Image 1 (cartoon, rainbow over the protein chains, first blue to last red):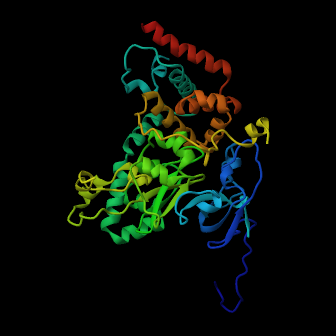
Image 2 (image 1 turned 120 degrees about the horizontal axis):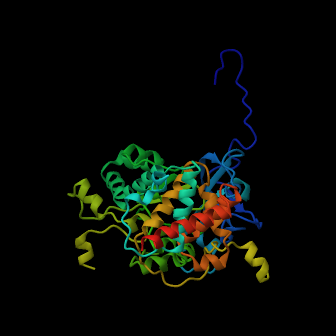
Image 3 (image 1 turned 60 degrees about the vertical axis):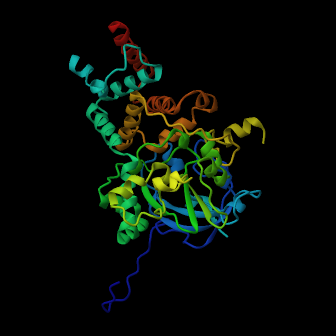
Length: 111
Length: 215
Length: 110
């Protein structure tokens, strides 16, 4: 940042340009039923997890990409960590086991 | 026109016999020829991409793993940015996928799956095995990974976390398996030869012939 | 949720967590046409004629009956055909005539 006596730079990022969420926070996968194409598996809908990392760079919503959108309106994907016991209440393995999945920003809410 | 008509990618491929190809084989030929005639693709592009695909095998991944085992700084770069480290190593990525390399440790065992289709780190491993693309693995790997691993002969103790990565977007995954004990004197080439495709998917560990013989 | 809703709300490939049988650990090499089909997919994606996600969506849209009867690459090539038709890059008559011509080469050579 150039602070040569003319004050700090003010840079306003565009809407959606910065990640809405950050690594380490708790999130819930939303519940909704898209028609036509989706990439959030049903088994994760409504489940709670922690954001492990923010995937860079921003990318096109793959639901729209499925119908031909190749550019524009890019938002972030997040690698989300879920405990197996959260996803499968009757899970038989070790309580330490978990799932990781990349989820688009429009499918998450902060908890 | 005669030259155009024969300007299709299977010029140089031997036809098995004089048996008429199946419906879908002929459909593929028809679609490709139409696209070439319309100038949308070129026969040479298809031929070249077949060469690209043929050049991508688990041996590439094995070399990347072996380098990570012997070179701690490369390992760190690989774990920080899988695609960049592979490209630095000479494995080009012909698509727009990203690569995250997942390190197996004493406390974490990684397994990769694509429940929705068959996403797989093709630039560095080649094409996936049939079982990876089929329903039983895709359905069960996320809900009963320990039973799935047991079918491959792999038993992971309960105090080790199993982490299943389900690829649904642009990121692909490669498991960096643990280096087997007793390989301290191995050359990098010998190490690479130990690393199998299935170990880089995460369904089996890397073992030495001695270890396998004693099982 | 009744059956008619389920068919639309849950895509046929969305199987994570469903019960399944023992994994059959076979691995067959690709037929030459299957490898050409895979190369075609990569070229179409590179040329931005048909991207990978469109291919996935096209396979899903085949529906569970077709998906259950066609092999992996058979689903791909039918999905490509449907998408290229929808984009008006090819027409049904063009495909039909070309397929007849391809078949005629084989029967003529017999």
